Image (cartoon, rainbow, N blue to C red; front, side):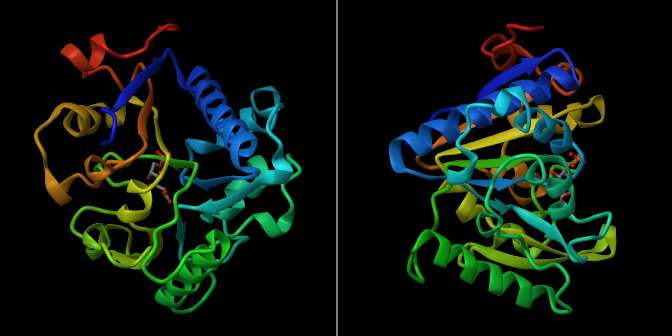
Length: 259
Ligand code: 6PG
């Protein structure tokens, strides 16, 4: 039985990034303490940069980075040195600043000409890294996710087949709006996680966030709303601008120590 989503609201983007880094670090330390290693799927886009910077400094100082295994929830269909690469963003802001062994950073090979080949290859990487069979789903200690103003998360965009994928762990998808292919983990992976942390910042997402958190079920029109860890926690980490339209119980129950 999954617990209801928890919400933590921070005053601004910097406080959000620090709080999110502390939340991630705490869970990584517990996982290593309990099981000898921690697994995390990183989010793409721009919001994680600040979070990574905090993880690479004081907020992550207690993390036994040599025991952390890093994956990506999604990747653009570009080479690893491309400006749009989620791997490059994480390398610059985190991996180059903490002692994670290179063989513990499993990137999606966005440079492959066939995005679906990259997806299938990454699914094999996942299964091998978690030591699971063809019908099992990996249970990440932490999945970091962002949310777009259209309600997408990872590369699960409204109206795409990736949102409804329930067999594959990783799939490729054509995103018409971006005129680009993406490679993304699928909902079964996110829903199997021990902890899913959405980190959402900015007023431009406030209406979508209200719809996702407080609105009626919107099915595949709001993929972020479909993320429901079935035996794990779901935590929304928001800044005040993103949370400005939340009302009633969602806001009352929100943890807003720093607001
Ligand atoms: C990506 C991400 C995507 C991102 C959201 C929010 O590859 O772009 O995985 O899901 O998290 O689009 O992006 P921002 O953090 O840039 O607002």
